[in-house]
Amino acid sequence: MLLVAAATLGLSACRPAPEKPPLETAQALFERHQYREARIELAGALQRAPDDARLYLLNARVHLALGEGAEAEASARRARDLGTPDAQVSPLLAQALLQQKKPEALLAEYGAQDSAAAYRMRGAAWLLLRDPAKAQNEFDGGLTKYAKDAPLLAMRARLALQQGQIGDAQNYAKRAVAADPDYAAAMLVAGDSARAAKDMAGARTYYSAALKLRPANIAAKIGMMKILSAQGDDDALAPLLDELVEQAPDHPDVILMKARQLVADGDMEAANRLLREKSAIIAQRPDMLLAAGEIALQQNYLSLAIDRFEQILRLTANNAAANNAAPNNLTPDIVKARYLLARAYLTEGDRQSAQRTLAPLANARDIPADLRPLLAATSAKNPPPVPQQ
Image (cartoon, rainbow, N blue to C red):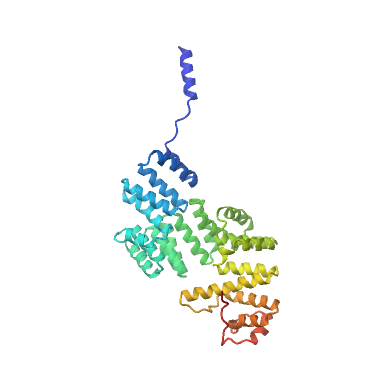
């Protein structure tokens, strides 16, 4: 009898543990930020249980985390069709429509609703439609009813930051953090607002908190990268930049920071090669074009440097035309680009082009000594045309 009992116990010990339900497995993967693995698990589960609304709801969350808005929308709508309460579906559907930049669909979905989420989504829709005044009306209207809604406060902070209202942005961001200390987007906009206010220590604290909440968040990592660079903390910056080069190799800020790191390391050739490879990405960023031009100029690649600096002038002129602004807005980057472009022309022996480039700066302050003779010979009354494409 004892032998039989022992054998039975031995057989029980050898049995494999029962498999977890696919939903439980996928949920665990999602919570560990293993989104691709969760997507694979859910794909198999949905083939076996195509009418399980819970699977579609989690599938929508996974696709959102991966930036796959269309797939997230499809899963959210399927979950709704299968009877999932709208209170669970609506936030996911809103995020999916936002990711796809579908403002009309957002307004159609949330136009008649009265909830904090509805105010957020209508505001987001108006931002996509480039009407910040209407967006602000939605956010402010929502805050009169839902004053402690952290996502609404965070979106209002982001709008204030975009409008250059740094103090207001900090105020709304702090209120968002106070309303929900576990809301990563609140920590992120608080970090961005602190950085805009030159509060590097405060920004670093907020970014650290955001990364504790969302370790894989690219925006928080990029914010932290900028702070570490500003603080000169190269020991912390190097491994973070390596992560970002792996995770977001085509993000403009990552490309620019990597190029600057290569320059600091003395590897000008590698920096220039990187910027050449990413030329299509940097073409819409004046700060990146400026860095690329400086590197090319330092290596005496004059034609490439001239092309980069002229791109800046074309880009800013085109942006000004699109926004009905003055074409010769002399921002620090534009002034620097004109100085460097003039030097490149002079090195090539093209004095006339150098003078034409400097003409809008004739009344500028802090003119470099080597360019003063040229400026003295030009007139600001007839500024030169911006180089044409």
